Length: 74
Image (cartoon, rainbow, N blue to C red):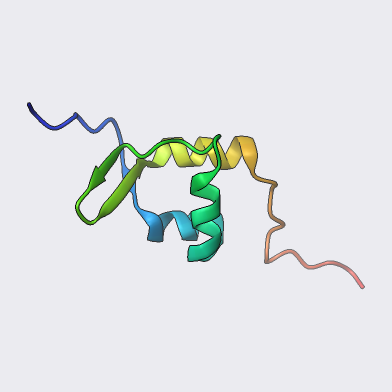
């Protein structure tokens, strides 16, 4: 049986922590949430997700974060 064809870029935990702006323990909580997409594939070194699935989750289930470079008048 062959490997599944990869329909797009993959991300692992390190990339997802950067995308979500969270640490390892918070990432574990997010991944355990029922609405978080399942891994595309689980390898010996860990699981990988489709970047598009993670981006869709962020768009649909995470609050927008304010831009860090915005200056607010005081």
